[in-house]
Amino acid sequence: MSALKDKLKADLSASMKARDEVRLRTIRMALAAVNVEEVAGKEARELSDEEIVKVLTREAKKRREASEAFANAGRAAQAQAELDEQAVLEEYLPAQLSDDELNRLVDEAIAESGAEGPKAMGQVMKVLNPKIAGRAEGGRVAQAVRARLAG
Image 1 (tube, rainbow, N blue to C red):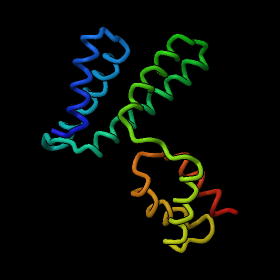
Image 2: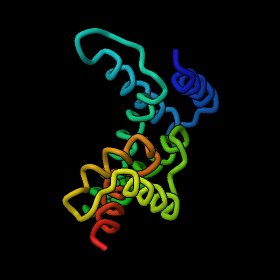
Image 3: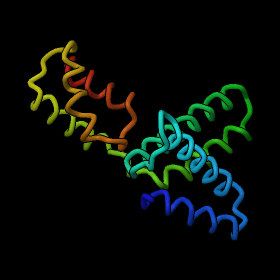
């Protein structure tokens, strides 16, 4: 079993004992998402830590989007509940890249791929995505690449 999944299970037990409802609910949801991913496809398999990070990143994004939707609908309590769950999930994710770090990696990827102009964005993203691996949101990365190639 992966170290991250072990940590999630241990934290689930700890949150049960501490009666921390938000943390308990969020970790249960995360483990359920991991289990669904493990049995998806033709045969069941054990997820690696990197794959679990991808699942948790996807779940955190869902929480952020749901929070925005609730906030736009004037449902502040539900929006805050989603943000609380997102905060718990982010504890298990790698630290996000700062703008300076992201721009440096974008510049390196552009130099490495020899890309010029906005049409070469795919080449840059192909080089850049493995280096970033869950440490920055896709839209933010694409925006940074687009800005560098345009200007």
